Length: 452
Image (cartoon, rainbow, N blue to C red):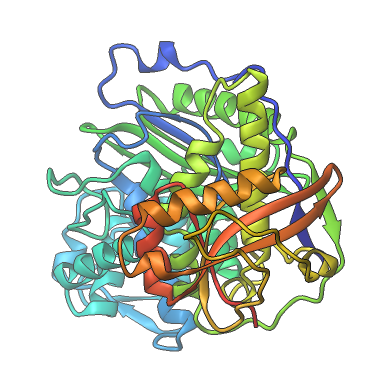
């Protein structure tokens, strides 16, 4: 099997995204395009605007269903009873009668294709006893995976003024499903579903016309317009797109095509080099690993490093160096990434960790040394082509950090790249929580898990 070492270079000349016409005079509009592998934001417009997710909500209902299946709490052949409350949901629904039941597997297909509100409520009651309890679990899960601006109050997405989310949070949710539950993600590609003699066509018609699209979910309520989460793969790169506020399903789909086309055009500028590395064994703590990798500190770093329109040489070099730092970070976190071999980010070449003698720095700051620190977490504050710049960054950060984070051990991890050596400036000796807290304070920072 093959994992990927990311050696990334980006020279942004033109974003390729044209959304003014879509956003003008439309308070419901928001959009985002994300690279599913790395979480890099390729484009965003009003991505943090609070909006109503409509039936995009059902992705979270399904996520918790997948989680229950993976944990063995339910099986695909279990029967889900239809309560009076579920049966009384307004369309879209299968129209199942109170007291009847549906298999979990069929319930999943009903949500993916028909977007059945009665089945969504029945699943919620089956898993949590009541839809209210399930909605709380949905919100808790959202917070756990970094959806900080989302609140769920029902399982279906039927309009409720309290049920809100953002384009960014919806993209995070989609990425979580793709990365953590890849075996169940395939359900979103189902184009038709036949039940009790009736055939239901998937509302996501864009899968029929857009090359590489294999999911995810549509949604509509009057308060939000026509919404869509879309996931498409071309070559070995997968993008996630989210659009809120379409004025019709047709124009929303056309806009999503434009966004994804521009995103694939932009992502091709990232050069990917392959390295043969054995795939690690899948471990059970997937959710915790993903949560750590999707921390606000890491995502802020991604978003700042790939901002739109940076075309001057200095900015391009900053983006290049920063992206390589992200690649280095992902390569140095096997204990986190081992949880999910589908996350295609891998370790750097072994020679990159060879010991070398670091020059001394200004008196008063501990001398940076190269150490393995296999038992403790680190934070990476930057990656530089100059050793002097590396030392200066370490000194500046240590002076800025409050106690006890300032007591960390400065370390430098060299990385050999096609363009020469890159020096990764780190502070080591933290616990996981300390590393995340330190990065929240530093802001432009990446937590690095201990090596196995």
